[in-house]
Length: 326
Length: 228
Image (cartoon, rainbow over all chains, first blue to last red):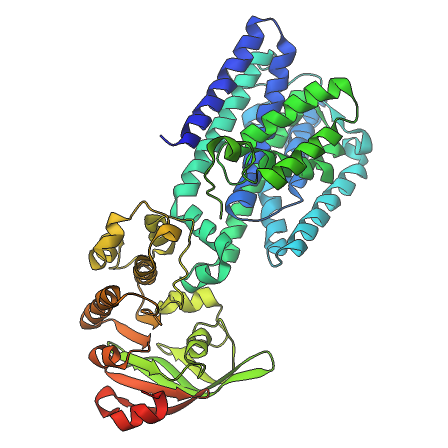
């Protein structure tokens, strides 16, 4: 096994061992903290598909994260208020069931990514960054000015949604559920990277011209990757909302988009476990430095500068050497 | 039947016109040599056929399909396989990954492509960027074949390679020709072209100035147009 393989295995082991140890030491807060890291990692895994494999620097992934969050908030708030979402032409009721919420989150954020991608992917480089940012901001202001679902104040849910056979109200089982979702997403990404689609996407990132001359359409490959990427980040949004039992326009803000990019770059762009390492470091810093100062972001900024200047492969690159991202 | 047909094609890079009237035909199963001195428009002609440079005038079609408005990847999918000048493999991908990324269904698959170049099978798990020049060239040809083209276009496929490797690549091109694949080939070595090509087209300053059977390209004509 390669060095990166061992690193990934160690990280996976840590993801299992850490919450168990926290539980044993009677520190449920640390379990919740780990849950947050796992969910943010999932958002990063989604972005990594577009950013790492596809080379698409999206500054609008908060839109998908937030859409996933609002999918949960809207469905659950209707369920707890016993008011249907729509009565005509057909009755749509709210729900407190996680599987249904996840499905809706994936579908809506995927659709949004398809629409945003179809328009944005006609541009590239800085223009792509700006247009995805613009779409993200559009959703942000839409959420703020939509009073039906809390507007600027957001939406609160009294009780966390349920999953068949799992007591989601207890931190550890909910963590296990989130970890299972992350594991599935990682497996999916691993398969994609080795599939003809993933290789073609990789080829189109290296040189769109060369890919075109062998009959590949970079636009279509990127659109498919962007859609899937948005759907995974949307699922992370639904979980994040469930973790906090709260959704607000802050999930849709451009700072959130920036943070998701930070997970990917900090961990190692285009590395399978990059976003996991990145989100882990981010949450750890947030917790440790956040206790010292409200302005802990300045240290994060310095760390990010150091990574970009001296360790382009991020945490994974630093440990495993060997760059695969060309 | 004519597969690729260019008639009076003109093209420019910005305000600098590069092609002033290129006419050439490649029939099914035929190998055509595209010749001319440096800077006469051979590569530009190929780039124009693939839509990488847009023709400003003239006619371009492939198997009866007008190529002028098609996007590059659609042109490639019609059955044009390009082996670009300077190899240009996907460097960070392995040999296998390069081939899988380009693969389209048809008789050419990984087994057949690596049977043509056994060295690629030996290097299957190696990054393209770490291969020797000759191996990269083989990979570029194999990658084009994996798209299952009806016409293989080779732009300077033996440039800068050691004599033994060149011989190996020319042998492969000869085998492809005998298998019935249509080929359009650009190369500096007239002797090698004579062995493989049925017909030749000579460009001078972006214009077709001679075309005919390779046997009719007399040393006198070659000296006048190609300087050899």
